[in-house]
Amino acid sequence: MSSAAETTALAAFLDWARTKPLPGTEAERRRLAAAFLSACYQDLGKEPRLLEPEDWPELLGRALPSRLAHKDPAGRLAEALIPALLEHLGERVVVPYAYELAVSLEAHWPAFQRALSSAELQRRPLGPSAPVVHKAPKLGRNEACFCGSGKKFKQCHGKR
Image (cartoon, rainbow, N blue to C red):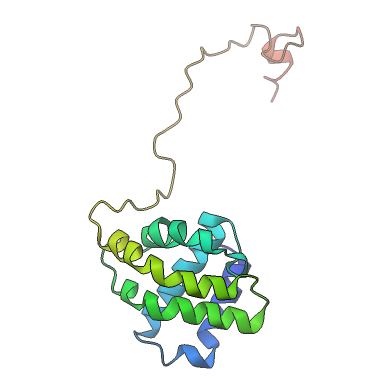
């Protein structure tokens, strides 16, 4: 979890009375809900309440599976947990496409299950994939500054 909005949404959902009877352990529900919220906020750049039906292929086909481990047991809870999360959201705030999201969600479960069970599933890289290598020649202290000021580098941008 990275933002206060994600943390608040997760805590509110987990404290909701209708979350307790959902299948799975509390840790699995927490992990899946956190992955869903992170996929919304970070991968799609949207609050979950602003999701549109067109977001399901990206969210369920790539973003959410990339945040779960290969064949993660929490993934089997998605078909019960994500609709509950959307229902909880609808009780707290206005969700403009609530009905459309609920109706179109069913069609995207097979893609989610395929992506989750796929051996080729690529996890999202946590850092830069390769080190940055500068190919420009190193600027000497007595050479003209790169900014075009006409001064020597040591008298311009090379000052410490």
